[in-house]
Image (cartoon, rainbow, N blue to C red; front, side, top):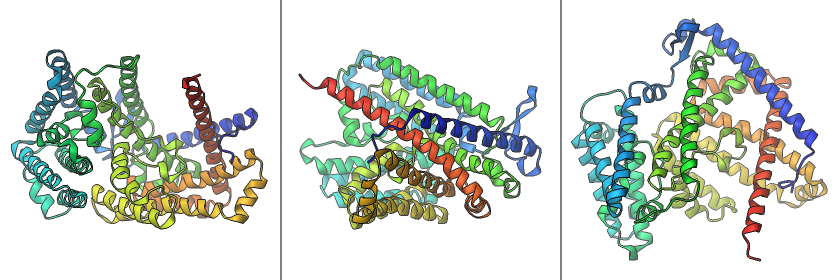
Amino acid sequence: MGIKTALPAAELGLYSLVLSGALAYAGRGLLEASQDGAHRKAFRESVRPGWEYIGRKMDVADFEWVMWFTSFRNVIIFALSGHVLFAKLCTMVAPQLRSWMYAVYGALAVLGTMGPWYLLLLLGHCVSLYVASLLGQPWLCLGLGLASLASFKLDPLISWQSGFVTGTFDLQEVLFHGGSGFTVLRCTSFALESCAHPDRRYSLADLLKYNFYLPFFFFGPIMTFDRFHTQMSQVEPVRREGELWRIRAQAGLSVVAVMAVDIFFHFFYILTIPSDLKFANRLPDSALAGLAYSNLVYDWVKAAVLFGVVNTVARLDHLDPPQPPKCITALYVFAETHFDRGINDWLCKYVYDHIGGEHSEVIPELGATVATFAITTLWLGPCDIVYLWSFLNCFGLNFELWVQKLAELGPLAQIEASLSEQMSRRVRALFGAMNFWAIIMYNLVSLNSLEFTELVARRLLLTGFPQTTLAILFVTYCGVQLVKERERTLALEEEQKHDKEKPE
Protein backbone atom coordinates (compact mmCIF):
# COMPACT_ATOMS: atom_id res chain seq x y z
CA MET A 1 0.00 0.00 0.00
CA GLY A 2 1.03 3.59 -0.50
CA ILE A 3 3.75 2.86 -3.04
CA LYS A 4 1.99 4.52 -5.98
CA THR A 5 0.06 7.01 -3.92
CA ALA A 6 0.59 10.73 -4.39
CA LEU A 7 0.82 13.10 -1.45
CA PRO A 8 -0.61 16.64 -1.47
CA ALA A 9 1.59 19.16 -3.26
CA ALA A 10 1.64 21.41 -0.17
CA GLU A 11 2.96 18.56 1.95
CA LEU A 12 5.72 17.76 -0.53
CA GLY A 13 6.57 21.45 -0.70
CA LEU A 14 6.95 21.51 3.08
CA TYR A 15 9.25 18.49 2.92
CA SER A 16 11.40 20.22 0.29
CA LEU A 17 11.61 23.38 2.38
CA VAL A 18 12.57 21.48 5.54
CA LEU A 19 15.19 19.38 3.76
CA SER A 20 16.75 22.35 1.96
CA GLY A 21 16.92 24.38 5.16
CA ALA A 22 18.45 21.51 7.13
CA LEU A 23 21.12 20.84 4.49
CA ALA A 24 21.99 24.54 4.33
CA TYR A 25 22.22 24.77 8.12
CA ALA A 26 24.44 21.66 8.36
CA GLY A 27 26.58 22.92 5.47
CA ARG A 28 27.10 26.25 7.21
CA GLY A 29 28.31 24.45 10.34
CA LEU A 30 30.73 22.34 8.28
CA LEU A 31 32.03 25.40 6.45
CA GLU A 32 32.72 27.23 9.71
CA ALA A 33 34.40 24.16 11.19
CA SER A 34 36.60 23.80 8.11
CA GLN A 35 37.66 27.43 8.36
CA ASP A 36 38.39 27.14 12.09
CA GLY A 37 40.45 23.96 11.72
CA ALA A 38 42.43 24.89 8.60
CA HIS A 39 45.55 25.76 10.61
CA ARG A 40 45.39 22.99 13.22
CA LYS A 41 48.47 20.82 13.64
CA ALA A 42 46.41 17.68 13.12
CA PHE A 43 45.34 18.98 9.70
CA ARG A 44 48.79 19.76 8.33
CA GLU A 45 49.30 16.43 6.54
CA SER A 46 45.97 16.38 4.74
CA VAL A 47 45.05 20.06 4.32
CA ARG A 48 47.51 21.57 1.85
CA PRO A 49 47.76 24.92 0.00
CA GLY A 50 45.11 25.17 -2.71
CA TRP A 51 43.78 28.41 -4.16
CA GLU A 52 46.48 30.61 -2.68
CA TYR A 53 45.21 33.77 -4.39
CA ILE A 54 42.10 33.72 -2.16
CA GLY A 55 43.76 32.03 0.79
CA ARG A 56 41.92 28.68 0.51
CA LYS A 57 43.52 25.40 1.46
CA MET A 58 42.41 22.04 0.06
CA ASP A 59 41.51 18.72 1.66
CA VAL A 60 43.86 16.13 0.11
CA ALA A 61 43.18 13.26 2.52
CA ASP A 62 42.03 10.91 -0.26
CA PHE A 63 45.27 9.59 -1.75
CA GLU A 64 43.63 7.89 -4.74
CA TRP A 65 41.63 10.94 -5.84
CA VAL A 66 44.68 13.20 -5.61
CA MET A 67 46.83 10.76 -7.60
CA TRP A 68 44.19 10.32 -10.31
CA PHE A 69 43.93 14.03 -10.99
CA THR A 70 47.51 15.19 -10.41
CA SER A 71 50.52 12.97 -11.11
CA PHE A 72 48.60 10.25 -12.98
CA ARG A 73 46.10 12.47 -14.77
CA ASN A 74 48.15 12.72 -17.95
CA VAL A 75 48.92 9.00 -17.97
CA ILE A 76 45.23 8.10 -17.65
CA ILE A 77 44.20 10.58 -20.35
CA PHE A 78 46.97 9.34 -22.66
CA ALA A 79 46.06 5.65 -22.18
CA LEU A 80 42.30 6.11 -22.64
CA SER A 81 42.72 8.57 -25.51
CA GLY A 82 45.04 6.10 -27.22
CA HIS A 83 42.44 3.38 -26.77
CA VAL A 84 39.70 5.58 -28.27
CA LEU A 85 41.81 6.51 -31.31
CA PHE A 86 43.00 2.93 -31.75
CA ALA A 87 39.42 1.66 -31.46
CA LYS A 88 38.16 4.15 -34.04
CA LEU A 89 40.88 3.17 -36.48
CA CYS A 90 40.15 -0.54 -36.04
CA THR A 91 36.40 -0.02 -36.43
CA MET A 92 37.02 1.77 -39.75
CA VAL A 93 39.64 -0.63 -41.14
CA ALA A 94 38.77 -4.08 -39.75
CA PRO A 95 35.63 -4.08 -37.57
CA GLN A 96 35.60 -7.89 -37.44
CA LEU A 97 38.95 -7.80 -35.62
CA ARG A 98 38.14 -5.02 -33.14
CA SER A 99 37.94 -7.32 -30.09
CA TRP A 100 41.43 -8.64 -30.90
CA MET A 101 42.79 -5.13 -31.32
CA TYR A 102 41.33 -4.03 -28.00
CA ALA A 103 42.95 -7.00 -26.26
CA VAL A 104 46.35 -6.38 -27.83
CA TYR A 105 46.26 -2.68 -26.90
CA GLY A 106 45.18 -3.55 -23.34
CA ALA A 107 47.87 -6.18 -22.89
CA LEU A 108 50.54 -3.77 -24.16
CA ALA A 109 49.29 -1.09 -21.74
CA VAL A 110 49.50 -3.55 -18.83
CA LEU A 111 52.95 -4.63 -20.00
CA GLY A 112 54.19 -1.05 -20.14
CA THR A 113 52.67 -0.09 -16.79
CA MET A 114 53.29 -3.14 -14.59
CA GLY A 115 56.02 -5.07 -16.42
CA PRO A 116 56.25 -8.44 -18.24
CA TRP A 117 56.31 -10.64 -15.14
CA TYR A 118 53.03 -9.22 -13.86
CA LEU A 119 51.46 -9.85 -17.26
CA LEU A 120 52.70 -13.47 -17.20
CA LEU A 121 51.33 -13.88 -13.66
CA LEU A 122 47.85 -12.84 -14.78
CA LEU A 123 48.08 -15.05 -17.86
CA GLY A 124 48.81 -17.95 -15.53
CA HIS A 125 45.61 -17.30 -13.57
CA CYS A 126 43.66 -16.96 -16.83
CA VAL A 127 44.96 -20.29 -18.15
CA SER A 128 44.27 -22.12 -14.88
CA LEU A 129 40.63 -21.00 -14.84
CA TYR A 130 40.26 -21.74 -18.56
CA VAL A 131 41.46 -25.30 -17.93
CA ALA A 132 38.98 -25.63 -15.06
CA SER A 133 36.18 -24.47 -17.36
CA LEU A 134 36.92 -27.35 -19.74
CA LEU A 135 35.92 -29.80 -17.00
CA GLY A 136 32.39 -28.36 -16.91
CA GLN A 137 32.05 -28.31 -13.12
CA PRO A 138 30.71 -24.96 -11.80
CA TRP A 139 31.66 -25.72 -8.18
CA LEU A 140 35.26 -26.35 -9.25
CA CYS A 141 35.41 -23.12 -11.27
CA LEU A 142 33.97 -21.04 -8.44
CA GLY A 143 36.21 -22.71 -5.88
CA LEU A 144 39.34 -22.18 -7.98
CA GLY A 145 38.29 -18.58 -8.67
CA LEU A 146 37.92 -17.87 -4.95
CA ALA A 147 41.26 -19.56 -4.26
CA SER A 148 42.89 -17.34 -6.91
CA LEU A 149 41.26 -14.27 -5.38
CA ALA A 150 42.46 -15.31 -1.92
CA SER A 151 46.01 -15.58 -3.25
CA PHE A 152 45.86 -11.83 -4.02
CA LYS A 153 44.36 -10.94 -0.66
CA LEU A 154 46.16 -13.08 1.92
CA ASP A 155 49.79 -13.47 2.93
CA PRO A 156 52.20 -15.02 2.13
CA LEU A 157 50.99 -15.42 -1.48
CA ILE A 158 50.11 -11.75 -1.92
CA SER A 159 53.63 -10.66 -0.94
CA TRP A 160 55.15 -13.19 -3.33
CA GLN A 161 52.91 -12.21 -6.26
CA SER A 162 53.36 -8.47 -5.71
CA GLY A 163 57.05 -9.02 -6.38
CA PHE A 164 56.19 -9.67 -10.03
CA VAL A 165 55.53 -5.95 -10.58
CA THR A 166 58.40 -4.10 -12.25
CA GLY A 167 59.44 -0.72 -10.81
CA THR A 168 57.99 1.39 -8.02
CA PHE A 169 55.45 4.23 -8.37
CA ASP A 170 52.69 5.87 -6.32
CA LEU A 171 49.68 3.95 -7.64
CA GLN A 172 51.48 0.61 -7.91
CA GLU A 173 49.58 -1.07 -5.07
CA VAL A 174 46.22 0.24 -6.28
CA LEU A 175 46.83 -0.95 -9.86
CA PHE A 176 48.18 -4.29 -8.66
CA HIS A 177 45.13 -5.09 -6.54
CA GLY A 178 42.68 -3.67 -9.08
CA GLY A 179 44.11 -5.51 -12.09
CA SER A 180 44.56 -8.77 -10.19
CA GLY A 181 41.18 -8.78 -8.45
CA PHE A 182 39.15 -7.89 -11.52
CA THR A 183 41.11 -10.41 -13.60
CA VAL A 184 40.09 -13.20 -11.23
CA LEU A 185 36.42 -12.13 -11.26
CA ARG A 186 36.40 -11.93 -15.06
CA CYS A 187 38.06 -15.33 -15.43
CA THR A 188 35.62 -16.86 -12.95
CA SER A 189 32.69 -15.38 -14.87
CA PHE A 190 34.10 -16.86 -18.09
CA ALA A 191 34.49 -20.28 -16.49
CA LEU A 192 30.97 -20.29 -15.01
CA GLU A 193 29.41 -19.17 -18.30
CA SER A 194 31.34 -21.89 -20.11
CA CYS A 195 29.87 -24.46 -17.72
CA ALA A 196 26.37 -23.03 -18.14
CA HIS A 197 26.59 -23.08 -21.96
CA PRO A 198 28.81 -26.03 -22.99
CA ASP A 199 27.39 -25.93 -26.53
CA ARG A 200 28.98 -22.52 -27.23
CA ARG A 201 32.60 -23.73 -26.91
CA TYR A 202 34.32 -20.57 -25.73
CA SER A 203 38.06 -20.47 -26.39
CA LEU A 204 41.07 -19.17 -24.47
CA ALA A 205 41.21 -16.32 -27.00
CA ASP A 206 37.68 -15.29 -25.95
CA LEU A 207 38.85 -15.15 -22.34
CA LEU A 208 41.92 -13.04 -23.16
CA LYS A 209 39.89 -10.60 -25.27
CA TYR A 210 37.45 -10.29 -22.37
CA ASN A 211 40.07 -9.82 -19.67
CA PHE A 212 42.44 -7.39 -21.38
CA TYR A 213 39.88 -4.83 -22.48
CA LEU A 214 41.79 -1.83 -21.07
CA PRO A 215 38.97 0.53 -19.90
CA PHE A 216 37.69 -2.17 -17.52
CA PHE A 217 41.02 -3.76 -16.63
CA PHE A 218 42.29 -1.92 -13.54
CA PHE A 219 39.22 -0.31 -11.96
CA GLY A 220 36.21 -2.06 -13.48
CA PRO A 221 33.30 -2.03 -13.69
CA ILE A 222 33.03 -5.72 -14.39
CA MET A 223 30.68 -7.01 -17.07
CA THR A 224 29.79 -10.68 -16.89
CA PHE A 225 31.31 -12.64 -19.75
CA ASP A 226 28.03 -13.46 -21.49
CA ARG A 227 27.09 -9.78 -21.84
CA PHE A 228 30.56 -8.68 -22.92
CA HIS A 229 30.96 -11.48 -25.49
CA THR A 230 27.53 -10.88 -27.03
CA GLN A 231 28.09 -7.14 -27.41
CA MET A 232 31.70 -7.39 -28.59
CA SER A 233 30.84 -10.08 -31.17
CA GLN A 234 28.70 -7.69 -33.21
CA VAL A 235 30.60 -7.23 -36.47
CA GLU A 236 28.83 -4.02 -37.48
CA PRO A 237 27.34 -2.47 -34.32
CA VAL A 238 24.76 0.26 -34.84
CA ARG A 239 24.24 3.15 -32.45
CA ARG A 240 20.76 4.00 -31.24
CA GLU A 241 19.37 7.38 -32.15
CA GLY A 242 20.80 10.09 -29.89
CA GLU A 243 23.44 7.77 -28.42
CA LEU A 244 26.39 10.03 -29.26
CA TRP A 245 24.65 12.98 -27.61
CA ARG A 246 24.13 10.92 -24.44
CA ILE A 247 27.80 9.87 -24.48
CA ARG A 248 28.90 13.48 -24.75
CA ALA A 249 26.52 14.45 -21.95
CA GLN A 250 27.94 11.72 -19.70
CA ALA A 251 31.49 12.86 -20.43
CA GLY A 252 30.50 16.44 -19.65
CA LEU A 253 28.88 15.40 -16.36
CA SER A 254 32.07 13.58 -15.34
CA VAL A 255 34.13 16.72 -15.98
CA VAL A 256 31.65 18.86 -14.04
CA ALA A 257 31.70 16.39 -11.14
CA VAL A 258 35.52 16.50 -10.96
CA MET A 259 35.45 20.31 -10.92
CA ALA A 260 32.68 20.33 -8.29
CA VAL A 261 34.66 18.01 -6.00
CA ASP A 262 37.75 20.18 -6.42
CA ILE A 263 35.78 23.30 -5.46
CA PHE A 264 34.08 21.48 -2.58
CA PHE A 265 37.38 20.32 -1.05
CA HIS A 266 38.60 23.93 -0.93
CA PHE A 267 35.77 24.85 1.43
CA PHE A 268 34.73 21.64 3.23
CA TYR A 269 37.35 19.39 4.83
CA ILE A 270 35.01 16.43 5.19
CA LEU A 271 37.75 13.78 4.91
CA THR A 272 40.20 15.41 7.31
CA ILE A 273 37.88 16.46 10.14
CA PRO A 274 36.89 12.86 11.10
CA SER A 275 40.57 12.01 11.66
CA ASP A 276 40.69 14.54 14.54
CA LEU A 277 38.06 13.16 16.92
CA LYS A 278 38.64 15.88 19.52
CA PHE A 279 37.86 18.55 16.92
CA ALA A 280 34.97 16.56 15.43
CA ASN A 281 33.40 16.22 18.86
CA ARG A 282 33.12 20.01 19.07
CA LEU A 283 30.90 20.19 15.98
CA PRO A 284 27.19 20.95 16.43
CA ASP A 285 24.96 17.89 16.11
CA SER A 286 23.61 19.06 12.75
CA ALA A 287 27.12 19.54 11.33
CA LEU A 288 28.24 16.17 12.65
CA ALA A 289 25.27 14.45 10.99
CA GLY A 290 26.05 16.34 7.77
CA LEU A 291 29.68 15.26 8.00
CA ALA A 292 28.73 11.59 8.26
CA TYR A 293 26.27 11.92 5.37
CA SER A 294 28.73 13.84 3.16
CA ASN A 295 31.40 11.15 3.60
CA LEU A 296 29.10 8.60 1.97
CA VAL A 297 27.98 11.04 -0.72
CA TYR A 298 31.62 11.72 -1.60
CA ASP A 299 32.35 8.00 -1.93
CA TRP A 300 29.40 7.71 -4.30
CA VAL A 301 30.60 10.72 -6.33
CA LYS A 302 34.07 9.18 -6.50
CA ALA A 303 32.65 5.91 -7.84
CA ALA A 304 30.32 7.76 -10.22
CA VAL A 305 33.20 9.78 -11.68
CA LEU A 306 35.44 6.74 -12.09
CA PHE A 307 32.74 4.62 -13.72
CA GLY A 308 31.44 7.60 -15.68
CA VAL A 309 34.81 8.13 -17.37
CA VAL A 310 35.32 4.43 -18.06
CA ASN A 311 31.73 3.93 -19.23
CA THR A 312 32.05 6.84 -21.66
CA VAL A 313 34.96 5.09 -23.37
CA ALA A 314 33.17 1.72 -23.31
CA ARG A 315 30.04 3.19 -24.87
CA LEU A 316 32.16 4.66 -27.66
CA ASP A 317 33.20 1.04 -28.27
CA HIS A 318 29.51 0.07 -28.65
CA LEU A 319 29.30 -1.61 -25.23
CA ASP A 320 26.53 -1.22 -22.67
CA PRO A 321 28.49 -1.27 -19.38
CA PRO A 322 27.02 -1.40 -15.85
CA GLN A 323 25.70 1.97 -14.74
CA PRO A 324 27.21 3.97 -11.85
CA PRO A 325 25.87 3.07 -8.40
CA LYS A 326 22.61 4.52 -7.14
CA CYS A 327 23.14 7.75 -5.22
CA ILE A 328 23.28 7.28 -1.45
CA THR A 329 20.69 10.06 -1.09
CA ALA A 330 18.13 7.85 -2.86
CA LEU A 331 18.84 4.75 -0.76
CA TYR A 332 16.61 3.73 2.09
CA VAL A 333 16.68 -0.07 1.72
CA PHE A 334 19.69 -2.36 2.10
CA ALA A 335 18.64 -4.42 -0.92
CA GLU A 336 19.61 -1.53 -3.24
CA THR A 337 22.78 -0.50 -1.39
CA HIS A 338 26.00 -1.03 -3.33
CA PHE A 339 28.93 1.12 -4.43
CA ASP A 340 29.90 -0.92 -7.50
CA ARG A 341 27.03 -2.06 -9.70
CA GLY A 342 29.28 -4.37 -11.73
CA ILE A 343 30.45 -6.38 -8.71
CA ASN A 344 26.89 -6.32 -7.37
CA ASP A 345 25.62 -7.85 -10.65
CA TRP A 346 28.41 -10.47 -10.55
CA LEU A 347 27.61 -11.49 -6.98
CA CYS A 348 23.86 -11.55 -7.62
CA LYS A 349 24.15 -13.72 -10.73
CA TYR A 350 26.63 -16.30 -9.46
CA VAL A 351 25.98 -16.37 -5.70
CA TYR A 352 23.12 -14.35 -4.21
CA ASP A 353 20.31 -15.20 -6.65
CA HIS A 354 21.61 -18.73 -7.16
CA ILE A 355 21.28 -19.54 -3.45
CA GLY A 356 18.47 -17.19 -2.40
CA GLY A 357 16.06 -17.86 -5.27
CA GLU A 358 13.17 -15.38 -5.06
CA HIS A 359 14.53 -13.91 -1.79
CA SER A 360 11.20 -14.41 -0.10
CA GLU A 361 12.13 -17.14 2.41
CA VAL A 362 14.09 -16.45 5.59
CA ILE A 363 16.50 -19.41 5.67
CA PRO A 364 17.56 -19.39 1.96
CA GLU A 365 17.98 -15.59 2.16
CA LEU A 366 20.18 -15.95 5.23
CA GLY A 367 22.37 -18.51 3.43
CA ALA A 368 22.54 -16.34 0.31
CA THR A 369 23.55 -13.19 2.19
CA VAL A 370 26.15 -14.98 4.32
CA ALA A 371 27.75 -16.51 1.22
CA THR A 372 27.61 -13.20 -0.67
CA PHE A 373 29.19 -11.17 2.11
CA ALA A 374 31.80 -13.86 2.72
CA ILE A 375 32.98 -13.44 -0.88
CA THR A 376 32.70 -9.65 -0.56
CA THR A 377 34.91 -9.82 2.52
CA LEU A 378 37.49 -11.74 0.53
CA TRP A 379 37.26 -9.19 -2.31
CA LEU A 380 37.80 -6.24 0.03
CA GLY A 381 40.61 -7.94 1.93
CA PRO A 382 39.90 -9.75 5.22
CA CYS A 383 40.52 -7.62 8.30
CA ASP A 384 38.61 -6.71 11.45
CA ILE A 385 36.91 -3.63 10.04
CA VAL A 386 35.80 -5.50 6.90
CA TYR A 387 34.43 -8.34 9.06
CA LEU A 388 32.38 -5.81 11.03
CA TRP A 389 31.17 -4.04 7.87
CA SER A 390 30.10 -7.35 6.31
CA PHE A 391 28.30 -8.49 9.45
CA LEU A 392 26.38 -5.23 9.82
CA ASN A 393 25.27 -5.07 6.18
CA CYS A 394 24.43 -8.78 6.13
CA PHE A 395 22.29 -8.25 9.23
CA GLY A 396 20.63 -5.18 7.70
CA LEU A 397 19.70 -7.06 4.53
CA ASN A 398 18.19 -9.94 6.50
CA PHE A 399 16.48 -7.68 9.01
CA GLU A 400 14.56 -6.02 6.17
CA LEU A 401 13.15 -9.39 5.17
CA TRP A 402 12.29 -10.23 8.77
CA VAL A 403 10.40 -6.95 9.17
CA GLN A 404 8.63 -7.56 5.87
CA LYS A 405 7.56 -11.04 7.00
CA LEU A 406 6.43 -9.62 10.33
CA ALA A 407 4.37 -6.95 8.58
CA GLU A 408 2.61 -9.63 6.53
CA LEU A 409 1.32 -11.36 9.67
CA GLY A 410 -2.38 -11.00 10.48
CA PRO A 411 -2.45 -8.26 13.16
CA LEU A 412 0.04 -5.89 11.51
CA ALA A 413 -1.41 -6.52 8.03
CA GLN A 414 -4.87 -5.64 9.36
CA ILE A 415 -3.58 -2.44 10.95
CA GLU A 416 -2.01 -1.32 7.66
CA ALA A 417 -5.13 -2.31 5.73
CA SER A 418 -7.14 0.01 7.98
CA LEU A 419 -4.92 2.96 7.05
CA SER A 420 -5.42 5.12 4.00
CA GLU A 421 -2.87 4.70 1.21
CA GLN A 422 -1.35 8.09 1.97
CA MET A 423 -0.97 7.27 5.66
CA SER A 424 0.54 3.88 4.76
CA ARG A 425 3.13 5.68 2.65
CA ARG A 426 3.94 7.99 5.56
CA VAL A 427 4.42 5.08 7.95
CA ARG A 428 6.64 3.25 5.50
CA ALA A 429 8.70 6.43 4.95
CA LEU A 430 9.25 6.68 8.70
CA PHE A 431 10.77 3.20 8.73
CA GLY A 432 12.71 4.12 5.60
CA ALA A 433 14.21 7.11 7.41
CA MET A 434 15.47 4.88 10.23
CA ASN A 435 16.82 2.44 7.67
CA PHE A 436 18.60 5.28 5.86
CA TRP A 437 20.64 6.11 8.95
CA ALA A 438 21.36 2.44 9.55
CA ILE A 439 22.82 2.30 6.02
CA ILE A 440 24.93 5.39 6.71
CA MET A 441 26.25 4.13 10.05
CA TYR A 442 26.96 0.59 8.82
CA ASN A 443 28.94 1.86 5.82
CA LEU A 444 30.66 4.70 7.65
CA VAL A 445 32.53 1.99 9.57
CA SER A 446 34.54 1.02 6.49
CA LEU A 447 34.57 4.32 4.59
CA ASN A 448 35.93 6.28 7.54
CA SER A 449 36.73 4.71 10.91
CA LEU A 450 35.08 2.80 13.73
CA GLU A 451 35.99 5.55 16.22
CA PHE A 452 34.31 8.26 14.15
CA THR A 453 31.23 6.04 13.68
CA GLU A 454 31.02 5.53 17.45
CA LEU A 455 31.26 9.30 17.97
CA VAL A 456 28.43 9.99 15.51
CA ALA A 457 26.22 7.27 17.00
CA ARG A 458 26.80 8.47 20.55
CA ARG A 459 26.10 12.11 19.73
CA LEU A 460 23.02 11.50 17.58
CA LEU A 461 21.41 8.70 19.56
CA LEU A 462 22.50 9.16 23.19
CA THR A 463 23.67 12.64 24.17
CA GLY A 464 21.45 14.28 21.56
CA PHE A 465 18.31 12.34 22.47
CA PRO A 466 15.50 13.24 22.05
CA GLN A 467 15.83 16.67 20.34
CA THR A 468 18.66 15.89 17.89
CA THR A 469 17.50 12.34 17.25
CA LEU A 470 13.94 13.33 16.39
CA ALA A 471 15.00 16.40 14.38
CA ILE A 472 17.39 14.40 12.19
CA LEU A 473 14.83 11.62 11.84
CA PHE A 474 12.22 14.13 10.65
CA VAL A 475 14.59 15.72 8.15
CA THR A 476 15.49 12.26 6.82
CA TYR A 477 11.79 11.37 6.66
CA CYS A 478 11.25 14.44 4.45
CA GLY A 479 14.08 13.29 2.17
CA VAL A 480 12.68 9.75 1.91
CA GLN A 481 9.26 11.10 0.97
CA LEU A 482 10.79 13.19 -1.81
CA VAL A 483 12.72 10.16 -3.07
CA LYS A 484 9.52 8.09 -3.00
CA GLU A 485 7.74 10.81 -4.98
CA ARG A 486 10.49 10.74 -7.58
CA GLU A 487 10.24 6.93 -7.78
CA ARG A 488 6.45 7.17 -8.14
CA THR A 489 6.77 9.68 -10.98
CA LEU A 490 9.31 7.55 -12.81
CA ALA A 491 7.14 4.43 -12.39
CA LEU A 492 4.13 6.24 -13.85
CA GLU A 493 6.18 7.50 -16.80
CA GLU A 494 7.44 3.96 -17.43
CA GLU A 495 3.88 2.60 -17.34
CA GLN A 496 2.69 5.25 -19.78
CA LYS A 497 5.59 4.49 -22.10
CA HIS A 498 4.83 0.78 -21.91
CA ASP A 499 1.14 1.36 -22.66
CA LYS A 500 2.01 3.43 -25.74
CA GLU A 501 4.25 0.65 -27.06
CA LYS A 502 1.48 -1.97 -26.76
CA PRO A 503 -0.09 -2.92 -30.12
CA GLU A 504 -3.64 -1.67 -30.70
